[in-house]
Image 1: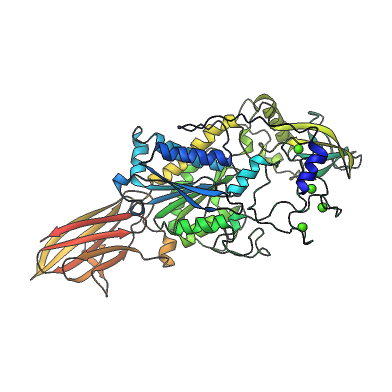
Image 2: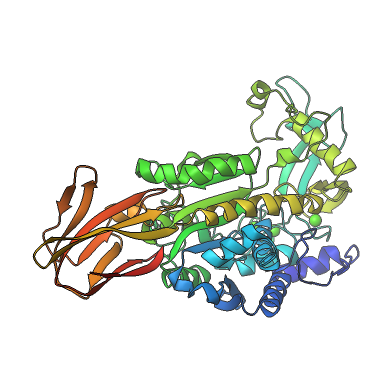
Length: 582
Ligand SMILES: [Ca+2]
Ligand SMILES: [Ca+2]
Ligand SMILES: [Ca+2]
Ligand SMILES: [Ca+2]
Ligand SMILES: [Zn+2]
């Protein structure tokens, strides 16, 4: 209601209908534009109907506002059932405003499907794994990011109302689009005692005043008025409820972890997706895409939680290659940014045994306007000066606004315009718009989606490829045969994370002999010197896992004559069987 009133009061004269210049969605999908929530759904449906043999489209669940959350499965049934293959899970846009995360997911799906059978690399990697792709986790968030006036950082929340200022009303005073341009920009007022002055080099920008300098402007915060007349402006906006703090593992209440929600998995979408993932125990590696900053983050999310160096080595294999595929990004443990509780990556690593990465897409430093891209606009020492967040670095702002002028078609920045504010009187509204700052301009989107999707593809190539060799089969006594089995992994991801082995998260991979009585079995610890470490119980079944680019060798002593079957079964690395006759 409050929004309606505001719209009528302030916007009817200046309200302009944004032309729905809607491009037709076709396969192959285009990535020189952003997809609304409805466009994403249409694109997924189109991918599914174009490639019915390779895809399945599921509604995982519904959001708080009743929107459907879609998951596209890509699996070639001719090479095996989905659950019998390593699973690669990719999602994005858990934060409603981080929309290019959805485009990366769509691009990845589009690439796998449209190049299948044409490109050998793609064909191989499609045939090998199953892919579970949820481009938009926060479906209400994406919908409202396009539809409503926002800043580039607003509308992250799930649509669960929250009383931020504890006045008994929920979400009663959010930002307001006073000039009706579809953006929540900034408000400023002329003030000789203000903290800012006009940048002498570009009158559209402001720079902080130095001590002893006369001020010119005071920043009044995001565009808006005091909707509930409590003397505070914009004190209780939409949410705030952070889906990426609501997962099951290490969930902490809001007095420990802001945005956590009332209890674990209380967001409808997060609960539905957590269940969807749990029903797919073959998921071995997963990516959750966000913006921004240019980062690849790995587990753990809190500093006090240790990750086995063997798991770190696996992360490094992908993370260090990712760095070179996405120049400028950093690769680091998630806690290096800050400790988080109840996030997707902890949940996936600790409860689902999946190697998990967060991709923080896009760096604003890619918005270059300079001769030599390799030379930073500001020398590092200056960047770290005490300018802090307030106004940022003037040199960077000047470059960004010239990028807007010469490369961004003036679409990223609104010049300051006078406005009569009911509380403040004569003010000005202007600054960076919704589709700026954290999102690449559409002309840069194709490269962003490709580079980042290729990192997922690289991880998908590294899922385990297990082969089984039977060797040294011989009679070693009366009616007693020795059978040796070697499991080999040709790729960089082990069949189980060391975390899931050490926590006994689920039943380990099994090597099982059937068809005859097994009297003894054990791991071959030194093949050349014939050293076996025998196991005490149930010799017909050995619990195992196969490391990165490694192997594991076992010996079975089998009674009788005839035929036995050796089965290898793994939750995340498929199943193999061989018959041995003696
Ligand atoms: Ca309130
Ligand atoms: Ca506005
Ligand atoms: Ca208020
Ligand atoms: Ca307001
Ligand atoms: Zn995010």
